[in-house]
Length: 196
Image 1 (cartoon, one colour):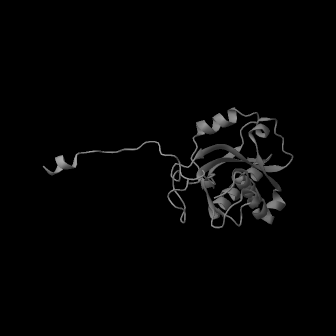
Image 2 (tube, rainbow, N blue to C red):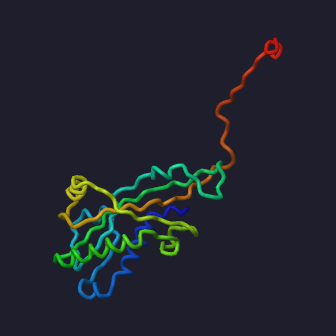
Image 3 (tube, rainbow, N blue to C red):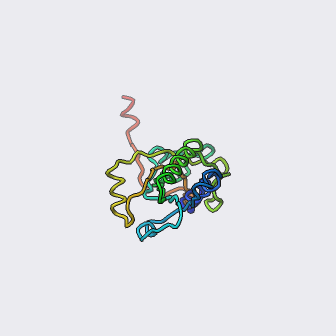
C-alpha cells in the first residue's frame, strides 16, 4: 500500500519508464520528450517545440473489484486500503505523421510488453511497499467520449491512446481502537415456558 503521493508518483514513474526505454534508433530519427501534464496546462495554449508524448490523468475512480479486499497478512478488523484506478490519456504531439505514428506504435508496443510496474520501477515519493504492483491496461473509450475530452480543451485533437493503471492502493489511517457499539440485540424468554 502506498502513500497519498502515489497517484502523482505513478504518473512520474510511467514518464520515467518511457523516457528511459525510448530506443536510440527512434531517438535519432524522432527525438521525443515525455511529460506528465495537468488539466490546466493542457487547457492552455500548448505549443511543444519538439515531438512530445503527454500523459494526462483525466479520471480517477475507486477500483470496483478491489474495493473492500484486504491484503494477505492483514486481519479482518483492519480497514482495507483505498484501491484506485487511474485513467490516462496518452497523446503524441508531432508535426509530421511519420514521427507521430512511429512514436505511438512504439509506445503501445512498450506498454503491451511491460504492463506491470513494481516497487523497483515506481518513484520513491509514493512510499510503495515491497511487492506492490500496478497493472497498466489499454482502456476502451468511445470516440464520442474522446472527442468530448478534446472539445473541452483548447488545443486541437491529437493522436491519443487511453490506459488504466490498476490498482493503486492507498494506505488508510487506522481509527484508534475498536469503534463504539451502535446497537445491541437481546432476546428474553421465560425458561419455564420453554420446557413445558
